[in-house]
Length: 103
Image (cartoon, rainbow, N blue to C red; front, side):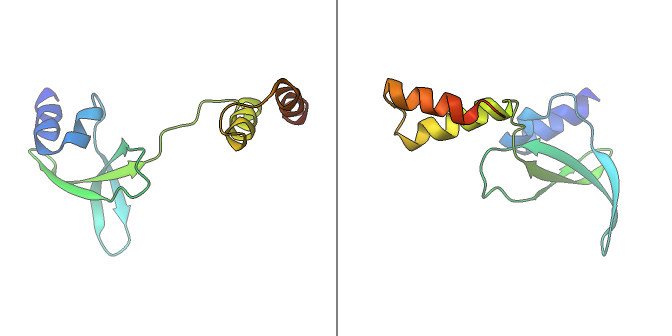
């Protein structure tokens, strides 16, 4: 499987992120069975890419958003702090804390 990883790395820079992942076979309407590999890409405009991998043939690189590991409360706090251009006053911080405490 090291050959697959090397082929993917050589094929596209985004593929360098995949590491030990292996393409999985998915049956898609109008295309039939194809190999798909999810690649984390923060760019919201990232597009599907097709690369040629020895042993697999065409592999579709599907961009997915990075997983948000923050708690709901922390996401709320980050969102509210951003509204104050990242520097809220102490009173605003306490208000944010109260607003986000129930999440």
